[in-house]
Length: 119
Length: 108
Image (cartoon, rainbow over all chains, first blue to last red; front, top):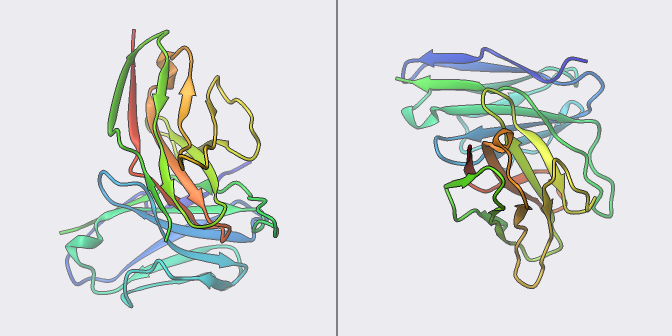
């Protein structure tokens, strides 16, 4: 079946502009995650959705970043007043359901990412 | 706080030689450890996890709680193993903390 998809694959914008990045998770996956990967670094957690609600947004760097998942499927990451330091690859991942108590972990399936460049 | 360290940015080995990628972590509780791999022009995917204790594509990794390490090993590297490898940790709250990654090049 189809994997996680992200659009656009590349986005170039100017400093100060607003951008939206979209993620389509695997059908039926209730958990959705956003990560940011800067050049030469591993992915860094931004936000986690369980269904429609943001269960953990502790990784969002500041209030310019916001994400929604209104119907519990597609998610949009929104960045206001973009800065050059926001340039990175933004990754989305989904999993069937969050892990159960006791440490069981459900594999996160990653999308191809959106490369954001802020000029 | 949880942290994952991969000390090697680049690793180059000859085909057929053993390869070991180092991963150290810091976490106060009982973490779950993973190795993710990204082949050229492909998306990030799970390679193995310490809980399953399985060998994938000839790779194994043992969690050493005393040394807080989760090194990835393969006795005989193949050219198709050339990729970027990330060690990752979950502290039980589902989000992953990744290391900076190691680029492996297997030369013929």
